[in-house]
Amino acid sequence: MKPDEKIMARLKPGCICMGIRLDKILKAIEEGARSFDDVARTAGIGRGDCGGRRCREKVETILRKTANRDRA
Ligand code: FES
View (cartoon, rainbow, N blue to C red):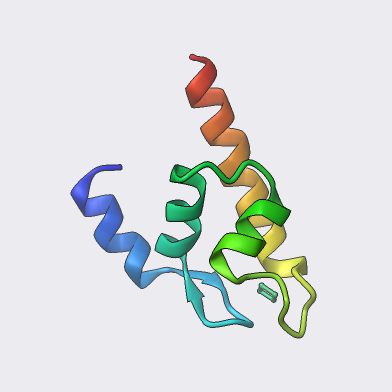
């Protein structure tokens, strides 16, 4: 990830319910998380009032893009 993207990720919400920023989700994926449950366990997301409905789609989109990039 480029330095500018890292800075922006620190400012963007990841899991709103748990107050977790996007950078923590991206770090979990960089460190090997490959499913929403992996990311949830590592980054501490998905256990808020919405039960992961809001953050799951965001995480799964990032995981798909990461998988596509890794295959290319
Ligand atoms: S936004 Fe992640 S649990 Fe609600």
